[in-house]
Image (cartoon, rainbow, N blue to C red; front, side, top):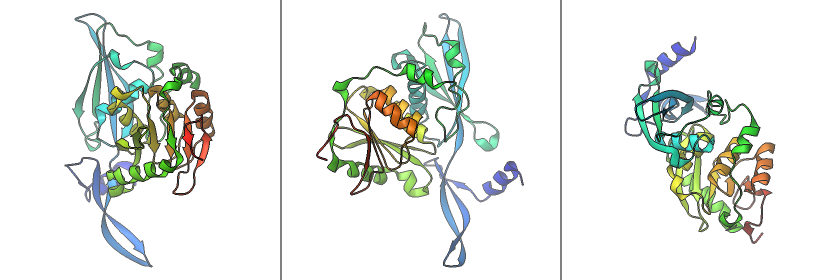
Length: 297
């Protein structure tokens, strides 16, 4: 049975939560204590989003083209688009005139949601940079970026005055706050989360998505007016290179994670002076890069 047949068969038993638009209920077989029971379960929605860009060559002449297609949970699409284009280094926030949702077709209708980023007149993007933006899936935030060197060249200069500092006694509280505020994960168990915190160890905002990088893009895009500043992020899973790169582009100086980092993520944190702490639990954590930002340990 092919994907289309499986999707159509499954869709018959799927009931979308139209108020949230980010989870569906399906009938499943649950096996427990050697017994099989039919139950209703909530699962996270994953659907494509096309990000388009509109540029003006003159007051009356414009060009519109698709930048990227990403698989995401359908919510906070405008924030996702803003965060994505800023953290890839294609533009700065002042270059953006508007971001608008322009499409509403669903996957089963052979379409996808669309967001249009309109740049201010006179702002252009180098065609070579545009070629680096390609298909992105929900597990890899740098798919389509043709070289790590391009990403590294786009990173802003470090500012020691903007580094957030925390006592180690507050680290676990931030992961607990993230867990408690991931409403979609609590419902489905199928989403990643990213939370923004300040020096008071208060979680200021939380975004969720089926993709780790999408959740962070949404968080950065929704809070772009706060940056640069003394902020850190707490992540629900592992830390990969692209997540560190996105944090660095926003000037975020601390990353806490429930999971592990990759080797390249550690190296980039060292290069960008980002404090990196992983495997954060109630009475333990691993420090991969510190930069004198953690007190009392």
